[in-house]
Length: 270
Image (cartoon, rainbow, N blue to C red; front, side):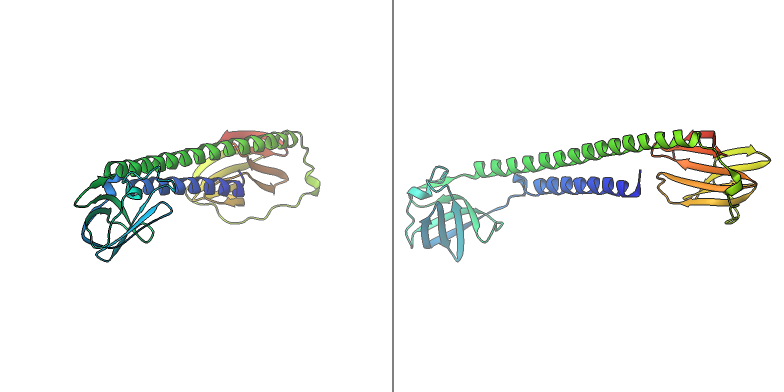
């Protein structure tokens, strides 16, 4: 695969993993076990109901309870209750401020009381489950998408490589018009040998050492390809009136051509 294709696949995987981890984290940090409640007691300083929300100002705290506009989800019954200024009230609320106000889950006066703590906790547990499932779904979607992309890219590149291979196998090299390749350097002392063949008294070696693929002829490096990740590439050299060509395709198969003829091929695993 080409470098740009590999980068695109890596980006897709990283974005999917990020979104997956974010939603799972969001779920685990917002479950019922993370909810902390507090209680405030005192006399009502201000109370008003407007558009499905009840505001109670008590001991300097402005606490909010929101129902639907028609009161359908008003489980505390505050839409049909009247709290009088100066009346003693005990309110149970979530200690964490959401938005700019506290959320009421229970209220008690001298004449009546109401609580939605169970429903409130179940609601956050549902939110936690949805976040976790959504995060897992995003992660799986990213893996599936990247797998499909890899498959399509490899299939496309394989078709291109097969066409190129057919062309290479039938190619006739005319050495009269080729310029001898210059020596680059001495080969690495260590490394893994991929090919080692003799042709017309030439020893041809292809070696992989420290992230570099070397084309070695008679103990000298004539061409090299640097890169930790190997993609499709070609190495060529013309030495001793012999044309030598190494190709690496998208299926990680390496081919050795000498004077246009396929001498050897090998499936690369690493």
